[in-house]
Image (cartoon, rainbow, N blue to C red; front, side, top):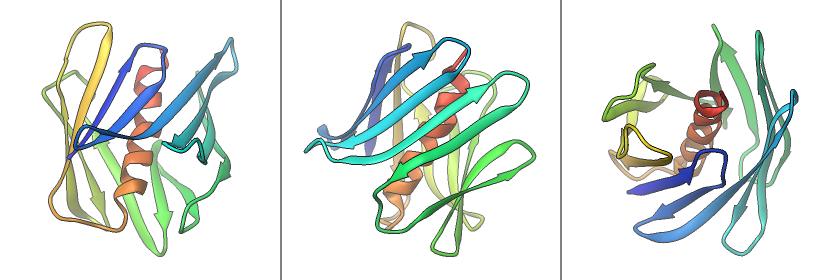
Length: 153
């Protein structure tokens, strides 16, 4: 089980079984969106991307240091990943609910996302994977990109 915690407009902290795994440092730039850098515990940069949404959503990966190369795949405004000939996508509910959504790989549900705090100044999400997968880290990174979209306003 993974837990993602943050305060509004602050950094995200990703835990695996209450052990800090990654940190996503965010920098908000007025009228230019959000820059996010994801670091492993040993301060090794894993992924850097920029997100901007006003009338059009702009998302660009600036740097990646992952075992498989990530390509962004968009369909009807939804953000998805293409990783090693697999398509990973995240369905999020539009309103705050306890069960926030799920992550699918090639149409098969692999993780359930729950929202531990529906209202308040802090955010806390839980990702439970149905079974172990080599793409868990990619699913978490995709969720971070999608939640940047929800929280950026």
